[in-house]
Length: 453
Image (cartoon, rainbow, N blue to C red; front, side, top):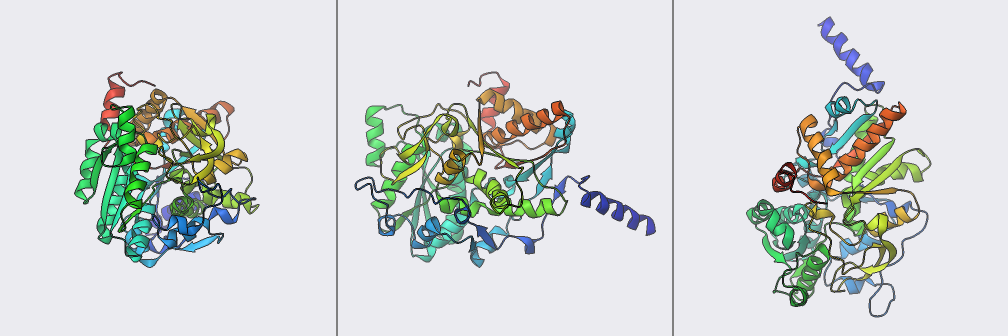
């Protein structure tokens, strides 16, 4: 007994000194965050308002009520620092949250780096990604307002899967316009959505005016998130019992995702460590904001000043690194309000890369603001380099990451190699936003040497 107590004490002392021997760090159910963190309360200047495309005046709430419930509209513009998570939402979160924080010790050893690499594992949710963190509250608030059906878009399928999952739990119908190239590349994502009751339509389709216009110009269009958004928004706006749900970009979506970073902060506090670098992939910005914003809160409050925040995007859709910071539509047909963001142009159709969730022409207005003010950094990687890193991670840590998450892994590996070259200890944290078990055709193409940039 005495020997056992000594071992426990030694492990505890090692933990509290930051010399971490454990690989997995968990929180109790009681430690699940009860509030979302709203970064809008802390940024130095208010964001530019959304504009009505006809009048160019700020959009008023009544213009958004045909597609969003008032509770989400209020969250979109709220200046409250903390917003309570409804108990009904918390109850469903507890199916998989709090999620583990894991140390990538075998990856560190492979890289021979003095850096400590941690990742927040969002792949453990039922749909396999971070997306249900916002799908659940969006379905909840719409259900409360009496809505019967939600329409949405999805790229690789993580968001469509998550909203189908959420709608099933709240007894709502779900229609998903899935970008056609991903619809064809990822049949098992479609099957997952249909298993949870979702109706999945390849976009562009001939079911909406927006889709028909695209097909008229290009019958073989591979589709894009911008096109799929147009179809879903049109669907919601023309059906009284239907609202629209978006899986990224908007303020309330990033708000809901902050449970990721809030948990990660608590987990790192328990082992007396704080990240020098926080990394997330970026398409619209939701998983990046989820992991980064709670740590940026410490920066804005003057508690921590040395941490770097890296947003990673595909070189084939480089919105933050090569886009323009200006007002643009969030969709191809121009049905959304004008949003101030980094954009490649709302009619931009990205190449058909396997990271379908990152094939979006614009970025979250909050993430765009942070990048414009140099609070965060942005890098872009080619697809083959990303999959090289994904393979290293798979063969060291055992988890096959989603192509989207693999962008963050590539950056984490680069930072760990820099630490090795500089002979500096560093704590690196990245968000593993989802697993890649429905993306094996992409891995097959890479392993066969058929994957192109």
